[in-house]
Image 1 (cartoon, rainbow, N blue to C red):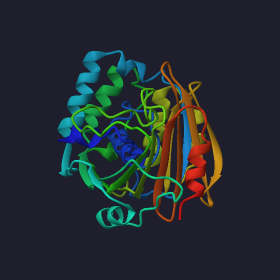
Image 2 (spheres, rainbow, N blue to C red):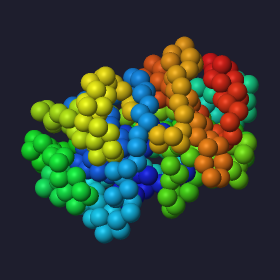
Image 3 (cartoon, rainbow, N blue to C red):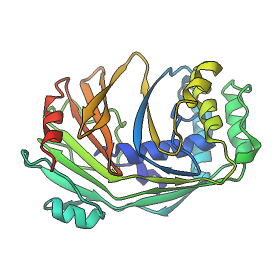
Image 4 (cartoon, one colour):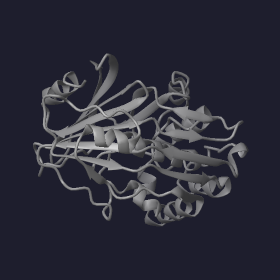
Length: 307
């Protein structure tokens, strides 16, 4: 059941990022995501963090350690609201009624399909001893998780998501692993653009848990120096900032003026294709547009055509 939360090929940038952030709180070794776990978190802005994958190699290259990590995640997580299958709706009005917020679609483009995925929620209970043991087995005994997180229950609520496809795009398949959030449409769908929108996910954690400290531990694990990790965590408002990690030297990012706010354009070229994702937050809604190639003009045109 928990696996299903991650199983949508159609991009759910905000939702997946929040899920992975929640895992970071219990297991800083899992991902280099340093962000949005806090006593009460709602997305109001986006920050991008280039990371070094050095620390992650101790996980991905160690089958036994990866297996124990997966087991720990599974045993510590209770899905309280399992998402259903993505449902196709006819127009923005139907999507708005189903998702519970005002869905915006560009006036100058006809969507191929509009999918609404129901809300989801889960609770993660931190087992500090096991998480610390994983850190030590990964060779980072110098990173010590605070005693205060032991037994902490982190509740993550993910609202309904609306994904609108343009061009020829793959059908969502919930029985297959999700694409990485930066992957977007593959090279086999060169004209596919996915426009996603959702209200802010919510993360609740107990009082007394120092989220900046946990974020710093996660960053140090990835290979960042203690000084740099401390400096970065000090610049982030942990009650409102969605931190998106990108691989250092493999992706670029830039601030862009979009939809009346400042957003982020992230681009990367892989072995198979070039990809981009445009992210922004406006009026409590998290938006993303993803596609293949290096020409992002169409994405910006779509935003300009939003009502």
